[in-house]
Length: 249
Image (cartoon, rainbow, N blue to C red; front, top):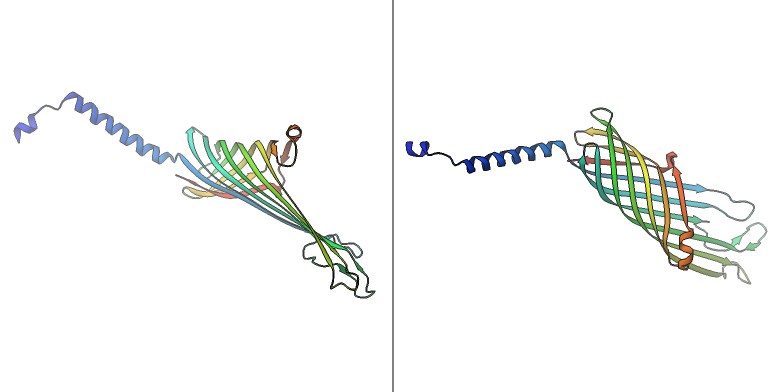
């Protein structure tokens, strides 16, 4: 045992042990820094307009759902980068519930009625670069540069209810349906706010966006008309705010 204790430790072995210790403590430090973030955001909008006048029903109902999920990593002080996916569902109905010609029970008069349903589903892979500024231990403000590509599918179904020759029970229904596919490229800035509720978990709010959008493909138009569809938008009203959650680890 004394011989073993007196054996010299090779210089190379000392260096290897030192390197392993440095990597071990560096890994512990990186874990404490919480270099990764997983976040969600969402928005729901509902509207119902009753604009009926005289005998014609012109009601309109809108349902809209926005949702996104993203994951990022800190690469420098106060900066994150990452990837995500967004989904938008928009549905608009004109004269919802109308399924037969108009009829006046008092006079017995009948007339043509109609309804229509328009749907947009948008699927969007995205990438982001985010700057984070601390306001304290729990609160932060953010500014995100987001670039995403939209794949949009639109459908519209219109129905026309024409009165029959004898009475309203024998009517004609004329249905027309259209479908189109579009693609867009988007780039924009999104300001936001984060509040840690418990340790690494908290809420986040995105206050609208400043964005540039250009159409890159359209199934119902020739290629020469694609580039004409470009727009720049600023949306900061509460109806465009998004609320979600984040988890830092």
